[in-house]
Length: 70
Image (cartoon, rainbow, N blue to C red; front, side, top):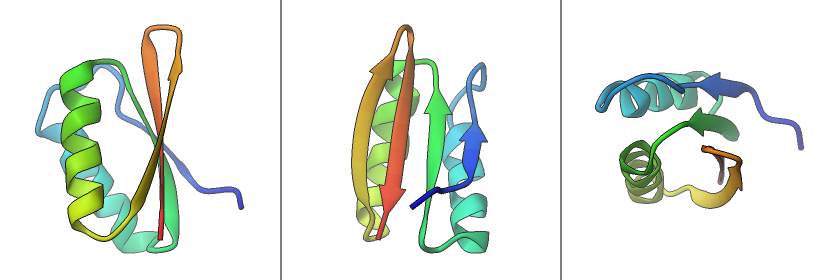
């Protein structure tokens, strides 16, 4: 399945989590979130798991790609 991509690179927490929450409200089946630091990927992952999503993490160079799916 192809999910919408949310580019949260260059943003400080809690902004990536807020963007993720808003995107999931419009796309409850899942999304892909791009972040560029460990803190953001940990916070987005924690939020997603607490909301009932499975999280798949891939590192792409200095960036992280999180695929969130129900």
